[in-house]
Image (cartoon, rainbow, N blue to C red):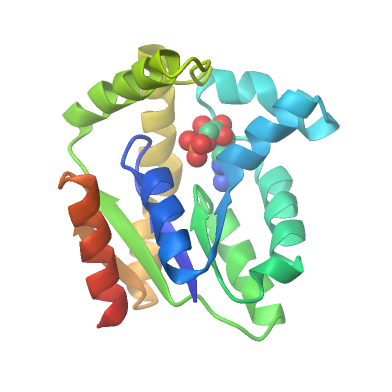
Length: 193
Ligand code: AMP
């Protein structure tokens, strides 16, 4: 099964992708996580991406398309995967379609997590607080200023994907404001249907 979780920053894509991947034996593919690992490791991609990510902007399409194309080719992805944070632009979506087509496969569903914008800042601030409480370092982009840029990027570049996948008959929308477990149940229910 090949799925996309779509939604603004703080919608719960990462949380849901992680538990869904465990329930279904799928691989979670988060370009944000991969980029953060590249920044930490100080690779060339990481060096290019660091400042862009910190400000909340989008890393260039060719960089993320390259990362995903390499990752999807690895054997553990053969059983299926959940994309969380990719695609984020129409160009990335078209590249993904081409990539899957070249492997003779297709996307099964695109699940949009719909949330109130007003709740997003509180969720992001809470995520930063929880990370600090657990002894970790919060993400460099989990603050009000970067969130504003990330939200703008979402509405400008990513939200057109809702129409793109609706037109493909792949879009399913669920209420991302429900409690975490309930969102998980809704996702399971629509995948079972
Ligand atoms: P995320 O963890 O999905 O919130 O991603 C964190 C940051 O990584 C984003 O704000 C972007 O700067 C960058 N990023 C992650 N995925 C993509 C993508 N598909 N296209 C462009 N930039 C991305």
